[in-house]
Length: 204
Ligand code: ATP
Ligand code: MG
Image 1 (tube, protein in one colour):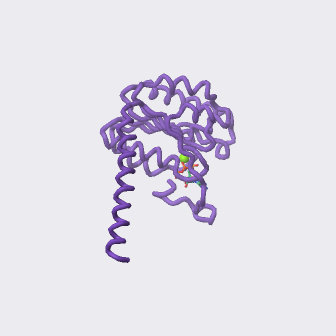
Image 2: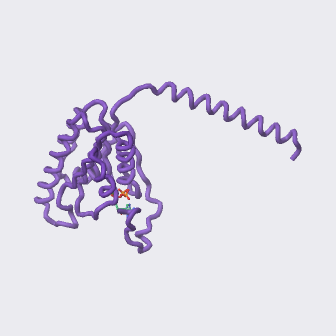
Image 3: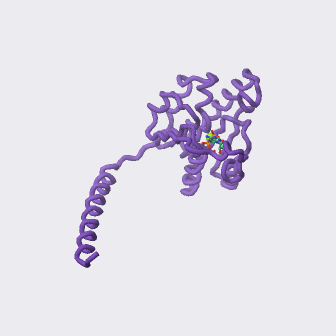
């Protein structure tokens, strides 16, 4: 390639990136609002709860308060709970006794889900809490332990700057419609299907 060909390629590249940067800068300048967000992380792929806990880390990093409500307790302990326990701004509640295949006791599961939701509602009314994670909340609706009609008013009435993250597969349409940000994580591959058990630090 001659020197002048290279110069032409570089000039075109500069022009393209200049235009791209101008467009991005314009969009950034147009986004001027602040608001407490509702996020839904759903889908069959791995990464829903760990994404929510990543936002907990970000929140605590700013010295703000965060609360996590884990609605499925039958699952094993996760590393994040032990790590965040060192932070006095962290509140971590494991609600419930474990669901469905773990307990096979529907009435007890419903009672546990409702008790957990009652605590979560208190956090949703507490303006000192910056971020509330409702981990695996979607299953409470799927199993009909709790209805969206019971859940949504508390979410809508929360303090205006409080962020909420809902995780779990098959999120109800009501959650998706109400949310500001929704990610559906697609399951492309998972090591479990190759016979590899849950790895500490990765899966729990
Ligand atoms: P993580 O907590 O790792 O972010 P998740 O919240 O997206 O995962 P859950 O359905 O809550 O997924 O299940 C949590 C556990 O199940 C983790 O150990 C995770 O690795 C595993 N898991 C998640 N998705 C799959 C999948 N598609 N197949 C098998 N195991 C999965
Ligand atoms: Mg999860």
